[in-house]
Image 1: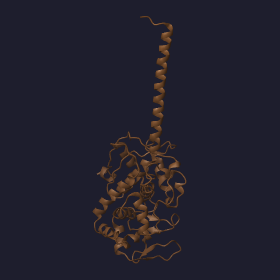
Image 2: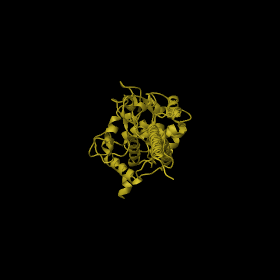
Image 3: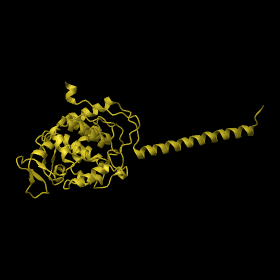
Image 4: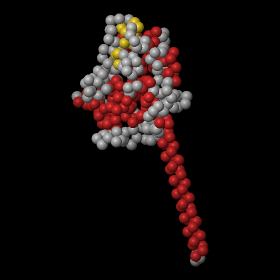
Length: 332
């Protein structure tokens, strides 16, 4: 059977039309899929645990590079960055949380609770830094970097092992959460419940998370409050709970906001939200348990940090949690 020129032309035209339509559908599908992944921050990490361990080591190796900074370590402020990046999550709306690293932008970077955190962000910038030639790990997202920074800080300051799961994506300023989602240190236990229940935490978890106050200090030029909570602000311990239970705290007489000073440990301080933990009948038992048992605190602290750091993150199914080896163990 012979095919006429007209039949051949029609057949060729239909073939071209068919292929063009298929290509168009594929292109639209790819575009929509890409937009979906971009919108929800979904992308499976293609990097290995060993590569993330190298990022961990880079952060860990720099924590004490400036002996004159605070108490000789950037660890506490990295923990604060990881906590504030995660603590904006709202379980009802599914907004906020560590996915996005939106504190890079205003208005979130200018929220009062985040005062001073540019120090932590700038400290981590050379690790990733898009525009820094010597940056060693440009492939890691800021969102993962900030959380890994918190994990490294906790472990390097002799705290518990905190599992880490990669896969957070960076978002733009349109995803910045509203102000007011982080705790107000001048408030009491009901305020703490309002803030933490919104994220899905109960009283025990609130007390366990508060153990992060074993680290660092307040600065008058940031939030108005001033001083450390413990005698060892560059090490994770249960000393915070011990100080809450054994010390007599009195209102400090000074020009700053209401905070408390120890009767014997006059160089230490507590915030109203700290004393709320021992004044609340449902929270105090957990303060006492952690004061008596540091291993219990470490166990619960690790679990609640893992939960906090993963709030609202749409990890792809099958993404593994990893634990990283502290640098002291690597050297032994």
